[in-house]
Every structure is written in C-alpha cells, then in structure tokens.
Length: 87
Image (cartoon, rainbow, N blue to C red; front, top):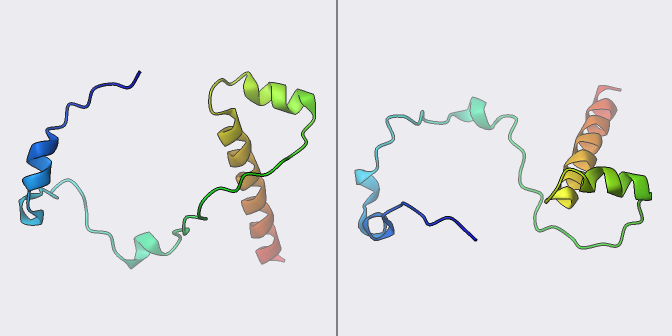
C-alpha cells in the first residue's frame, strides 16, 4: 500500500514558475554537467543465466534484487570503461 501524499497537488497545478522559491537550490553551471551521464534509456528484458549462489546472494537483500544486479554490472562496466580510457 502506498503512502498518502501530503502535497497539495491542486495548489501545485495552479502555481506559476515565477512563484517557485529556488533560494535553496543553487543554479547549475557547466561544471556541474561536465561529468554528467545521459540516462541509458529504457531497460531491456533479457534471459540471463546466473549461478544459483549469485542469485541467492542478491535475493537475500530483499526486494529489488534485480536492480541490485543491474547496479553491480553497471559499476563493473564503468570500471572497465575507465580502465580502457587510461590505457
């Protein structure tokens, strides 16, 4: 069951951009975006065979174990990409 939102969405809908308080959000400059990564896009569903102990390890972490496997693979991929750039 999802938590009930405490946001007054009717108020948000009629709010104008000029009414938004950005005082606690610094303006982002080119330095901020220098190391930004574009979102890779929609996930692809594939069939992947993994050793049972690998799957069991990630499943012990609870919900989102597939997301954790994806994150581990992403970290490995990024490390390999950095290694390839430095050679």
